[in-house]
Figure 1 (cartoon, one colour):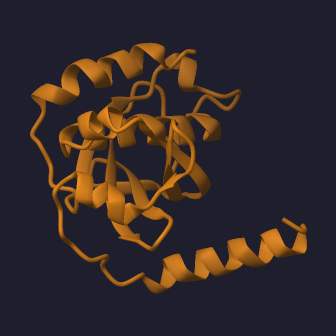
Figure 2 (cartoon, one colour):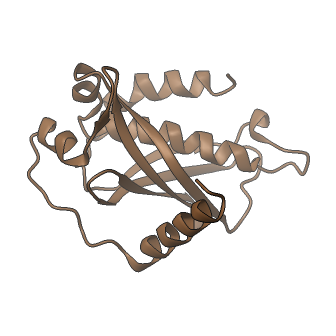
Length: 177
């Protein structure tokens, strides 16, 4: 609930920021607030994941996808994610969360989130997401692109992404999932 004001801010101001193409990087500005801190007085690791959600909302609005997604009764869900921390974000520090779509397959979209401050990458997140329909069932990335009037093919899957997906799949198998 502590991110509700940030969500409202994204809804309000995304429409006035520069639009982005679906394959372009979307930079969303943030600042570390006292409610983001953990006992060590830097941004809590869980906050990073929540801010990635907000950055994806900003990206969908600025890419012109949010309205069409809503009109079709679709909604995104995160299937898996991982994050790598490099440097701590400190109280009141400004940073940008740079979001970009890097690839997709028949079921999932793969996005990268870079937390940057003063030109330095502070953390790097990867997510595997899909869209569901409120009527039931999955929405393929191809159906999503068609609804956005885009006729594009996925870029090749980067090796680091494929390695993460392979590890994620092996881990799921070892747990019987």
